[in-house]
Length: 489
Image (cartoon, rainbow, N blue to C red; front, side, top):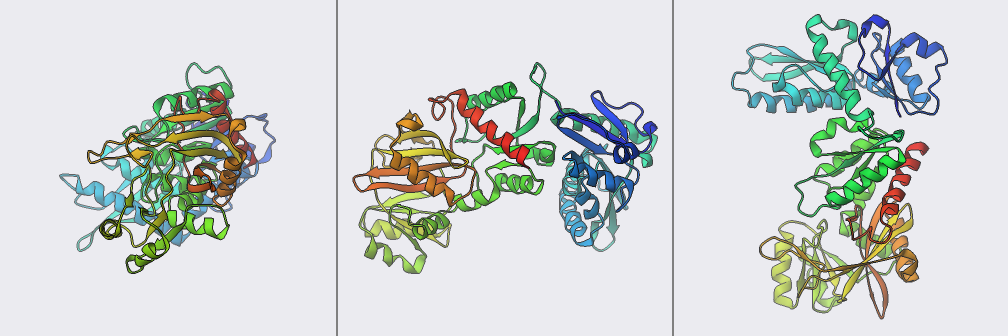
């Protein structure tokens, strides 16, 4: 289980620490060998001297050298001193502040301050401001100084760290509750777990998503298998962005896109040095079919013939492809933004509809098959293999229809060793172009060979479908990959 350590200059700075925390003097941590065994060590640095080259700064720097997770990090301490980085963070906090003030009936008449303790504050009206400040600067105690200009209105004048000795008696209960909540929420083992918890894995999901990458039963299995392996799996939602740095790794189980929270979470995890599946580079590459099409052509990986078109080059489609022609927007998912033109009139009409949303579209050779292969690849190796049949009376796996309710075909899951070698080889070759994460490769097979249709960065893993052959072993393999990534980092 994780060792939870709080560094203080004087033991009386934290006379009644939350249960499960070990309190160590900053000087002792710096100068004396303290043994934690092979446990994961997490440190809250509450030193009074959080300035560059001060004891608190050296404690955070030394913690990182020892492989301990620490807040604030040495980089976070410096970021509050660097004008450029501090200015950027202050403007982000200011935007949240102005939104908060717009919802308050009686706004303050003068300048004021907001004190944030691990992203919490005593005034619930400014809870989002406190969370944003904590997320931007990652210091346990922060003061957001807000000025009211007669002409320009409210703005953030400064954000500075405070130390535990600066807290007034009235602030102590709020601080204590915030410290207890921060350490309990992400750093303790779930109740009833007997296995020693080595690491914590955040799983980003949206319970309201219509077609999520994993269903609730699959997520529950991941959590159960994780508990057996000493990995605490916790489901988080987009609202938990400020908590992300409390975990060891992130698994994204929402449909990824560059303009939704998934990419922001992936970037944040990468910035924090956390393993994340899938990483922002993979999301960037896989969510854009233009990149995929050009990359497959450049690397000579077999794929249906594909043209990248703008509104002025539509004629190329009729010159180089035969009807019917498949039309796609670059960033569609689950068969959305994909249509088929059976003749020239349909090509013109449907392309106009797609160009309304994107400057570029793809025109692709129509390759009819009864099913698509889906090969799940993790760390460059096949993990699962399924065949997805087309939706009833439709040419795609998903038929969204006029009502907006998606219908889909059936499936058949194979053992990797029972899958044609050519299917596996082409799938793995395609994922090498994207990265080393978790991918789902869609392929078509006919008498001409095997062709890559798409490479998805967060493939479906649903209970009774993709895990039908491996069952718990699939989730164990996933978690083992996270453990290797955490320990390598």
